[in-house]
Image (cartoon, rainbow, N blue to C red; front, side, top):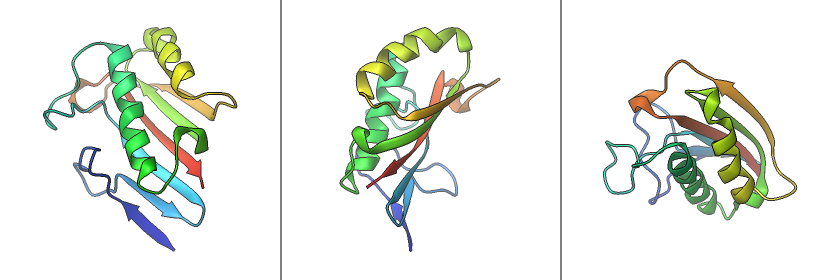
Length: 126
Protein backbone atom coordinates (compact mmCIF):
# COMPACT_ATOMS: atom_id res chain seq x y z
CA UNK A 1 0.00 0.00 0.00
CA UNK A 2 1.29 3.46 -0.90
CA UNK A 3 0.67 6.53 1.28
CA UNK A 4 1.46 10.23 0.83
CA UNK A 5 3.52 12.09 3.40
CA UNK A 6 2.51 15.66 4.23
CA UNK A 7 4.87 17.26 6.73
CA UNK A 8 3.82 20.57 8.28
CA UNK A 9 7.42 21.79 8.59
CA UNK A 10 8.21 21.10 4.93
CA UNK A 11 7.15 23.28 1.99
CA UNK A 12 3.99 22.18 0.23
CA UNK A 13 4.47 20.46 -3.10
CA UNK A 14 4.24 23.04 -5.89
CA UNK A 15 3.11 20.56 -8.51
CA UNK A 16 1.28 17.27 -8.96
CA UNK A 17 3.45 15.29 -6.55
CA UNK A 18 3.71 14.45 -2.84
CA UNK A 19 6.40 15.64 -0.44
CA UNK A 20 7.03 11.96 -0.01
CA UNK A 21 5.40 8.56 -0.13
CA UNK A 22 5.70 5.24 1.62
CA UNK A 23 5.52 1.82 0.06
CA UNK A 24 5.84 -0.97 2.59
CA UNK A 25 9.01 -0.34 4.61
CA UNK A 26 10.39 2.13 2.05
CA UNK A 27 10.05 5.90 2.35
CA UNK A 28 10.60 8.11 -0.68
CA UNK A 29 11.20 11.85 -0.24
CA UNK A 30 10.63 13.85 -3.40
CA UNK A 31 13.30 16.21 -4.67
CA UNK A 32 13.47 19.08 -2.20
CA UNK A 33 14.61 22.61 -2.90
CA UNK A 34 16.06 24.92 -0.23
CA UNK A 35 12.77 26.80 0.27
CA UNK A 36 12.84 29.33 3.09
CA UNK A 37 10.85 28.43 6.20
CA UNK A 38 9.77 32.10 6.36
CA UNK A 39 8.50 32.52 2.79
CA UNK A 40 7.62 29.46 0.72
CA UNK A 41 8.07 31.41 -2.51
CA UNK A 42 11.76 32.12 -1.84
CA UNK A 43 14.96 30.21 -1.34
CA UNK A 44 16.81 30.31 1.95
CA UNK A 45 19.41 33.08 2.03
CA UNK A 46 23.06 32.19 1.56
CA UNK A 47 25.13 29.95 -0.66
CA UNK A 48 25.51 26.23 -1.18
CA UNK A 49 26.22 25.44 2.50
CA UNK A 50 23.04 27.15 3.70
CA UNK A 51 21.01 25.65 0.87
CA UNK A 52 22.33 22.16 1.60
CA UNK A 53 21.49 22.54 5.31
CA UNK A 54 17.95 23.64 4.46
CA UNK A 55 17.34 20.80 1.98
CA UNK A 56 18.48 18.26 4.56
CA UNK A 57 16.32 19.93 7.24
CA UNK A 58 13.29 19.59 4.96
CA UNK A 59 14.06 15.93 4.22
CA UNK A 60 14.47 15.34 7.95
CA UNK A 61 11.00 16.85 8.54
CA UNK A 62 9.43 14.61 5.91
CA UNK A 63 11.11 11.51 7.35
CA UNK A 64 10.03 12.38 10.89
CA UNK A 65 6.38 12.19 9.80
CA UNK A 66 6.85 8.42 9.42
CA UNK A 67 9.14 8.00 12.45
CA UNK A 68 12.36 7.89 10.42
CA UNK A 69 15.59 9.85 10.80
CA UNK A 70 18.50 10.65 8.53
CA UNK A 71 20.14 7.47 9.86
CA UNK A 72 17.40 5.50 8.03
CA UNK A 73 18.30 6.97 4.63
CA UNK A 74 19.64 4.29 2.30
CA UNK A 75 20.10 6.34 -0.88
CA UNK A 76 20.20 9.98 -1.98
CA UNK A 77 20.39 11.77 -5.28
CA UNK A 78 21.89 15.26 -5.20
CA UNK A 79 21.37 17.65 -8.10
CA UNK A 80 23.87 20.54 -8.24
CA UNK A 81 23.59 23.56 -10.50
CA UNK A 82 27.40 23.70 -10.38
CA UNK A 83 29.71 20.78 -9.68
CA UNK A 84 32.14 23.40 -8.36
CA UNK A 85 29.92 23.35 -5.23
CA UNK A 86 30.65 19.66 -4.57
CA UNK A 87 33.28 20.21 -1.86
CA UNK A 88 31.18 22.68 0.16
CA UNK A 89 28.06 20.50 -0.22
CA UNK A 90 30.07 17.47 0.93
CA UNK A 91 31.14 19.28 4.12
CA UNK A 92 27.51 19.73 5.16
CA UNK A 93 26.41 16.32 3.84
CA UNK A 94 29.14 14.45 5.76
CA UNK A 95 28.17 16.17 9.00
CA UNK A 96 24.45 15.44 8.59
CA UNK A 97 24.57 11.89 7.15
CA UNK A 98 26.71 9.88 9.52
CA UNK A 99 28.40 6.52 8.96
CA UNK A 100 27.28 4.31 7.42
CA UNK A 101 26.53 7.00 4.85
CA UNK A 102 23.77 6.40 2.30
CA UNK A 103 24.54 5.34 -1.23
CA UNK A 104 24.56 8.50 -3.35
CA UNK A 105 24.52 9.85 -6.86
CA UNK A 106 25.46 13.46 -7.65
CA UNK A 107 24.23 14.95 -10.90
CA UNK A 108 25.32 18.24 -12.39
CA UNK A 109 22.36 20.02 -13.94
CA UNK A 110 22.01 23.08 -16.11
CA UNK A 111 19.33 24.73 -13.98
CA UNK A 112 17.11 24.08 -10.95
CA UNK A 113 13.71 25.61 -10.13
CA UNK A 114 13.79 29.08 -8.56
CA UNK A 115 17.51 29.32 -9.32
CA UNK A 116 18.39 26.90 -6.50
CA UNK A 117 21.94 25.63 -6.21
CA UNK A 118 20.88 22.19 -4.96
CA UNK A 119 17.97 19.75 -4.96
CA UNK A 120 18.00 16.41 -3.15
CA UNK A 121 15.74 13.37 -2.92
CA UNK A 122 16.15 10.19 -0.91
CA UNK A 123 14.95 6.71 -0.12
CA UNK A 124 14.82 5.53 3.50
CA UNK A 125 13.92 2.20 5.07
CA UNK A 126 11.92 1.91 8.28
